[in-house]
Image (cartoon, rainbow, N blue to C red):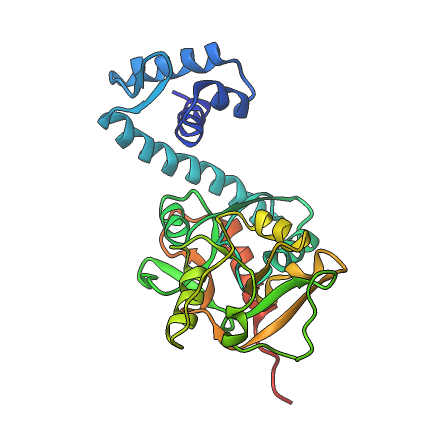
Length: 298
């Protein structure tokens, strides 16, 4: 058994496709299949359910997969730890971010990249539940998510400022004479929103419902880029976090605050509490704390 076989197994789990897993691992599909069968022979277990295509993992395969993830995390952590001992920070930082986060994750990425040129980054747009699950399984290093259901025994967090909401619009299609808008004014506008069930959308629904207002969005989507496209063509306006950075993506976009509008739960940067945890995750979390710390008085 070698570390590459474990990487192949994890890649198959993440892609759910033999061909895609092979491409990710920069090998041919027959080589991937051969190496996985060799792993099965060495362990004396059937790990993968095979038909004409990938059909999933056996019960034993799922148990082995969990160990494979832990071993790979320890392997990557060892190299990151060695680099940290040399005063370097290398590797890939995996950051999970909820859609329409009230903090621009590029602030963190820019900070880490400027301080550590050897770092690479993977960003994943995920639900709060998926972020916590992947952090627990060591599939993410850090998460930018809501803290409503956070288990403080399992995770360490840096709580950020409350997420305030505003109305994103294109000045070529919409103009507002007031410095802010109330919830009643939003009822008359064509609105584009994230799909129901997402935390940010739940906060919007609560804002309307608690004021006895009926929300009838023109457009609903689970993709932020589609929301921005709809705003850009003048189809609708969108309720988004004020500090998301979305209004800076184009000169004709503007963001006007909504009175008394913020998410139901605070946003935070989340780190897995227990080992195995990489030096990379620790270092970036600590740098984020310094970046986001309130200025000292005086």
